[in-house]
Image 1 (cartoon, rainbow, N blue to C red):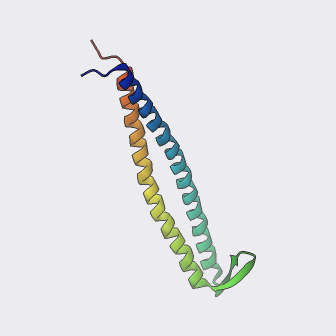
Image 2: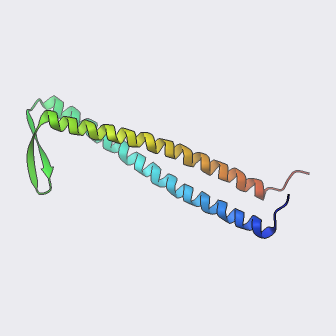
Length: 119
């Protein structure tokens, strides 16, 4: 079954739009992933520094003020933040894999339409 030239052109435009959108999403996903990984490194460093200092309380910034907080509570908060980031990283890696596969398949389909069939 052959397609009309207009239908083929519309399909190519749709695939190119999808490819462009997926590439943009992939760039955003990679950026977010890098940010979360960096954030976890900082959280891990904070946790190790606080544990090494062996103090009973720490000062947490709250706007223009500082609050004195029990070290164990603060460490738990940092660990919870780190665990939440790990879940988001896991989710973003799945999204990244999906987008990379989608981009690859879209390229394959575009090439299938562009290259002439063998004779």
